[in-house]
Length: 256
Image (cartoon, rainbow, N blue to C red):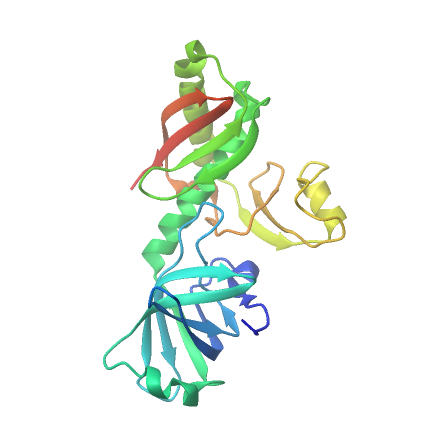
């Protein structure tokens, strides 16, 4: 697709749920789904263990409305998949190119996704404090149907029950105390300092990574959305810990 990378408005302000942009093109996937390509977006695409936003795109100066059901990113271009409300205007959509559009993200879905994602990072913060600092964070799955964080390394089975209780207590203590959460796009060296002195190998030196900082703990690279304060998670329960093939999974839920 011959388009410039989509500007990610949620990287600048992850608490903003409305923005305006310009319509660039309509994309039709092989499975028949249609997607809108915009100059910029406030919609978070699925990725990093976080489900996508949903919401509405309204074309300025017309009655065209597009219900966003899924959002994906490919080669830096964000694809807003969904359906037009009312009659299908695909045949005349070319005339709308360059027109201003207004974007609105579903608030309840964004808030839930942000709470689940932040809770996953909160677990990373607690591992060292409960004697599990030898575990290296891996992938996370922050979807409502069964969120977990996976770590490289093992925990003896006889320790599961104790560590599970300690992790839950530590996490809820931090939630009850609260702490501001913010994101910033920083030069590599400054980001490294904020993250405790080093960054993961997958982040290129000289780049400007986006860093999330939760409360007083060191920051970490992340492209997702988060709560504005740790207290917004409300409470957390560790439902299960298990080790298999040198990987440890910690499953959790948050208060509704």
